[in-house]
Image (cartoon, rainbow, N blue to C red; front, side, top):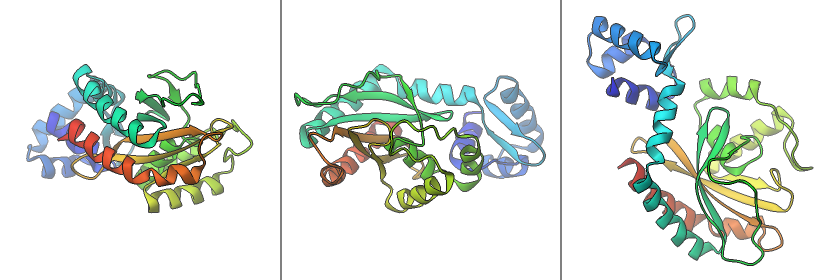
Length: 243
């Protein structure tokens, strides 16, 4: 069962019974019983028609709970602390849960002018106007991204929030090419942010590492200068979480 869940979580698109049997080496008859059991307990979802299977919400909750294990978070916070020392700005480790971004861990900037967000660890924030959210969408396979974009509420939170789907799609293409998420005062007025992917051993993005700052202290260009530090820290986090 764990092997099947692993295959589904890394596939990027629904897997048919035949595909799962080939990749797992499990006979179709045994695999069918296994999938029925997993579906009953909401660890997998059967896509209507011949679309195959995808991970269910219970599988997502299990993954998030694993990432939130105290010993893992302590190790991740050590990386964030070093990164804040290099950048001087607040840094977050985030995951995608449903149609939103969830803060897993944060280390605050030591600066007196840091932006005090009332967004504690565990808070969910939108995808379309955050650096991590746009990065998660940009790195998604096209079959998963299309339905997500159709159901997103592109609610304006600041005058700079992208609220038109064509403009968001253009931004996501640039984000995917650069593997860099950008928030130019789109989520909170007076705050800019950048985000880089944290990928597993198969190169699949599983988390985002973000750095944000008040515009009174740093510009978006300033945060771009910190991207090499963020990418090195992202590799360190990947070693902790996925090795």
